[in-house]
Image 1 (cartoon, rainbow, N blue to C red):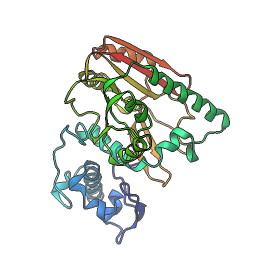
Image 2: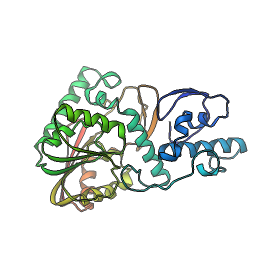
Image 3: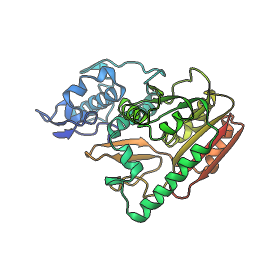
Length: 325
């Protein structure tokens, strides 16, 4: 798991770029951070890399002193590497601080690393194929979710948050003027290719889903993002979502139900609201993954100030969420 540095590894695949690396000495910082030297040197420019560097420094110092992690060298600026930098809420910034901010940084790294696999998940290819019966149910429910989204009165100025590789963006771009945002660049590059293939236009920008709205729009869509919002911050995010919307406009989302056949076959079992996700190249990331019931979602929408709230399921795999500002 990549939530923190635990012990050094003599050989590893870099958690950021995937490069295979073997350390020169057993105590090299690269082995503690599981980052190649090039990525370790970029820690001043990237929150996830800073987090890994900081954790590696703490773990290595604790091992040398015999104390627990965090007992020495508690900031990246106190020893090797780049100084710690503040994290804002603007475009591309990961939200929060402490454990929540660390997890957000890891989520961005996960999205970057997984960009080539997202469509495999949708299409049930490779590690995501779960047999003809489960896959047939998946495809039927995915079609149902797409038809539901297409049937909503989405028009005008549309924002799609956490858009990923743009699986739903072509549909949305055909309904109005679309602003497409994601905190990771690699998925956005694939979304751009998808829109070009459909001869559609949209405004694509790196922007965190938690960044404060800079205007009001007629529709907000954030598919498969709400399940990555910590449970205790559900209403907080939905309040932010409502601030994007003009009165009477629509919030829509498709998200995951907790079916064991939904993810890759080799993912470890989920523990609570935190999941370990393994990629095809063997890298693992620890992310927030919260499965909410329709009743829980409707209650959170009302608590966030939405005038109406409705959450239904497609059966096994997806929950369909609609709210009116």
